[in-house]
Image 1 (cartoon, rainbow, N blue to C red):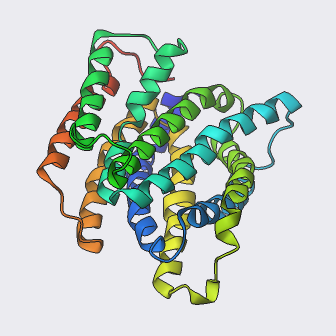
Image 2: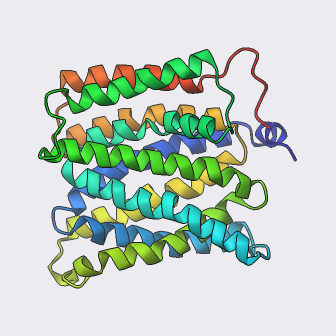
Amino acid sequence: MTADVRTRDAGLAPYVALLFVQIFFGTLPVFGKIAMREMAPFTLAAIRGVFGALLLSLAARAFAGPAPHQTSGEKLEIAFLALFGIVANQVLFISGLHRTTATHATLLVATVPVFTIIIGLLMRRERPSARRLLGVPIAFGGIVFLLGTAGLSFGSASVTGDLLVTLNSAAYAFFLVRARDVLARRSALSFVAQAFRYGAIPIVLIAIPDLVRVRPAELSAEALAAAGGAVLLGTVGAYALNAWALARTGASTTAFFIYIQPLFAGVLAYFVLGETPSPRLFGAAVLIFTGVAFAIWPSRSARPAA
């Protein structure tokens, strides 16, 4: 069954799912900032990795059935992808979020579609077009504007955090481009669950120095609830719904919904964390969103995604 047929059969359900995906992802920076008031960044990354792998595996077993037989090469391929889509994605994002604001982190995540196009072009998976090539420097101009031309120094915690989150976007984009080959052969939910199982191992190894210092009894109910929210909404709910919707919509449609994430996260960060958006942030948002729109908006002559 092709993607357009599945979309017609599902009606509005995939679009509702994508809306909730971005809302769930938008809660992650806020939950993360609250949890990291009492736990180290890598501790939170390990919690997300381990419980994400467990719950996504249970969901895949329930909804996708047993995974098909795999060769050693296929398992190695998924393990390789997990290093980018799970390990680098989790570690870089949490490390960056610890050093910058939730609003900055969520805005920079919106560059994932642009990085996806750049990597697709380099790997010859995307067709270069004037509009896409124009969108890339516009979006990156927004990143540079947000970082500030006077403060591009690793001595600034916020700038370092912004750069780490940007690297996270690039790593996840590489994962998305390479994962398309695997998703053509198996269930999206089953693939994501397996990638999480492989990725959780190195994340835990990286986090061991922080995990041995954790005293669960000393953590407040607020920190535990925030960590739980980061797992259930920002990890399991977001990844599971995104995998389900991705199988029923085109890639450009899925990418378009990322616009919602910074808007929701910015409002949530304002009311929960007291983060006040700056004029520089609004200017950067205009540039980044304009660049992303140029890069991912389908042309009139574009065919529906299969």
